[in-house]
Amino acid sequence: MKDIKVKWTGKYPALCHGYWIIEIDWKSTKNFLDDYGSRLEDLNDEEKELYNLLTSPMWTFWTYNRRYFDNKYNEHWEEYTNGLEFDEWFESDYKKWLEKIFKLIWIKELTKEEWKDLYNKIQKKDFRMESCGGCI
Image (cartoon, rainbow, N blue to C red; front, top):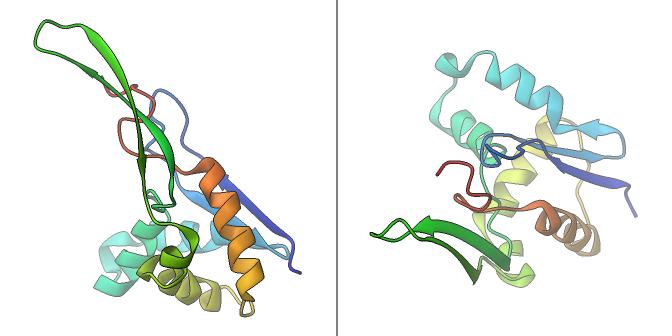
């Protein structure tokens, strides 16, 4: 089984502004992000899509929070579930895009068990826009 580590760099009050650092057997998406991020204007559409994947929610299934104010400026926190369960996520474009990134940074193919491990680690750090309320 591969050694998999996951980190989301966004923090309050800008939880949604960050990027995913996925490290598998000491190979990391950080170099991919640095390389592609330094030349965003020159990337083709597929390369931009791959870069954007690592700067966005991963849509794993979880219970999330949303903070908002009503028309009388009363603060509300709403809890809701959202996202794709593992089996759906495993068949989704998220997995396909990650596979493309992993090939670019020389990460060998993952087994289904390793994908499940990766999903679980992403799920613990996944977020949705408005999750921390910092933008309000």
